[in-house]
Image 1: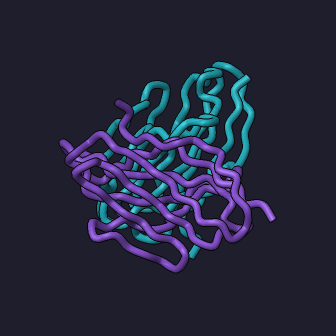
Image 2: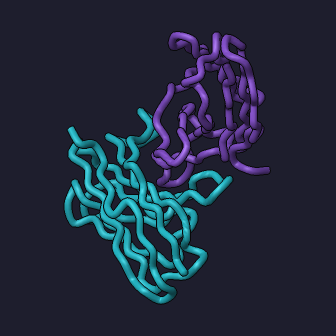
Length: 113
Length: 114
């Protein structure tokens, strides 16, 4: 099983749509979870951390299910500017590598007018 | 603040040539990382450092070397370039372990080996 798995997409949605991305991770000891956004030919940028209780930042909602080792990101009222690749990221939590992050391959989102 | 600065932005190398990818950060972060990203693939960790004078291998260290003589700088050295090293290289830093707050990335170096 790959360490972090995501649906590669692409997800093609109209403006205003709600879209959800899912991610599974294999290391049950992982403690930290993030969603990053990566625009074409740019560096990844932190979108939001994911907390056990779930958290929201404007139009973005992240959920974590530790029992199922599953993370989700919901984007409401999609904007053209949301078009990007969304990376699911978890920390590698064993040995001396607590700080290292494992990146999924990303899910590409394209929001159309 | 400049954040994490990488140079050069682009480079073409011939097989067997050597080069150093530069990375510097001005945020006083103690942790620094080098990742490579191949098309359609996730970022893979090459090397990381938890502080000046301390470095360790990541998932794909072969063909690379690093040093960390100061808190600010974390250069990545390619000794004998091979076509398999064609990739986009990202340097990143974090304050404390990234499990606390994630990384700040540099803008990347696009390397082609021909």
